[in-house]
Length: 195
Image (cartoon, rainbow, N blue to C red):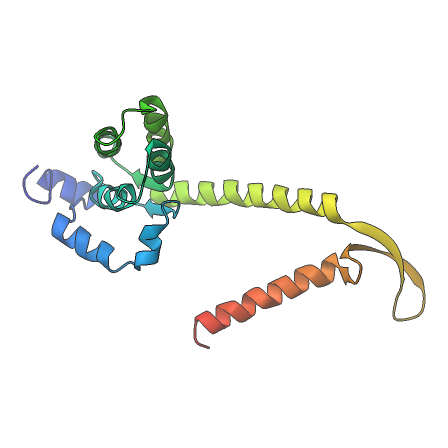
């Protein structure tokens, strides 16, 4: 590779230009320290190239790891997507080399994590698929929680009729519980946006 490109053709075809290591470090320095202190914080590089950002991220995470199990957790929290297969292969190998330069244990497991987390394809399509898969898991978890925790009991409605209601707590219906949760989420969003 010459400088920050592999070839002019790749620049023309894919807009592929690699970020200089000095710039990568400077950008990562902008992230608050408490993010780096948590090796389980998830990072996604949607156009990972040959892994410049992911290697910097893992270097900082690995500095907080005490053993290979922590190292595997750090690997598990990093995701990358690139449209070029050779970049994906190079990134996986680069990150695996970083892991094995520190730990000799669980090489196969580390390689499998990278195989699953560093993928080739259209970043927007893959992120949409991941979002839908995670939403599906969340909905299943919510349904399981509700099925495990709901109670059906008689309650008087506003007209004095006895109706059956589904409750999580004695005084809070699921509808009220979800409505309150949505309103609280909206309040937090407004507050975080300074509105």
